[in-house]
Image 1: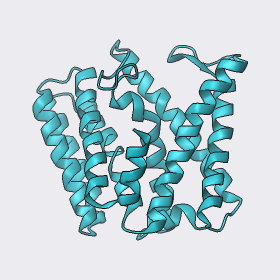
Image 2 (image 1 turned 90 degrees about the vertical axis):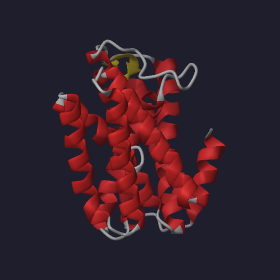
Image 3 (image 1 turned 120 degrees about the vertical axis):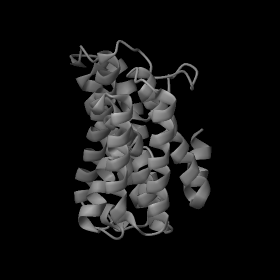
Image 4 (image 1 turned 135 degrees about the vertical axis):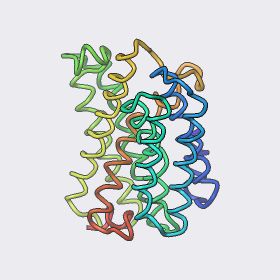
Length: 253
C-alpha cells in the first residue's frame, strides 16, 4: 500500500484527490456504523457530497468557502441523524482525511515534500512507538483508552518520527531551520493524540475496531486516526504562516 500512496502523492492531480476522498468517505461510513447513527446510508452520501464539494472548491481556488460548506453539511448530517454532536463530528473527522492533504499537495513540488513529510513523521512515530514500547515497556500511557501503549513507546515514537521528518527535509534540499524540529515533534504528538481520541470514541460505543476493510488491522479510521490529526495540525500551521500556499507555510521558515 505504501508504494501506491507514494506514487499517487508524486503524481498528484485527480488520482491523488480521489484516493483521499475515498478514504474520507470510508472513514465517514465507519464513524456512522460505530456511533450507530440512524439513516447511516443517507448520512454517508450527504457527508460525501460535502467532502467532494470541499475538494472541488479547493481545485477552483475557492478555499475560503470550504469551512462554511463543511460546517453546513455537517450540521445537516447531524439533523438528519437526530444526533447532532455525533453527526457533525463524523463529517468533520472524515474531512481531515482528505481536505488538508489536497490543500497541502496543490500543484507544486513543494506540496509533494509537505505531504511526504507528514507521511515520514507519522509512519515512523508508529514504528518507533511499537518497537520502543515493546522493548522497554514501563508505565502505561493511557490504561483505560489504550492498554498496550506506554510512555516509553510514545517518547520513542516522537523521537523517531521527528528525526525521520528532519532526514526527509535534508534529502529534499530545502533549507532546514531548527524550528522544524518543533514542527515535527508537534506532528508526532498530534498523531498520537489522534490515536488516543479514536480509541476513546470506540470505547464509548464498546467497539474494538472501526471496521474490517483491512484484514488484521481494522478499518480506515483505525489506520488513519493519528494521520488525520497530524494532517490537520500541519495544514493549520501552513495556513497561519501562508494562507495562499500552506505547503510553503509548513516547510519554509
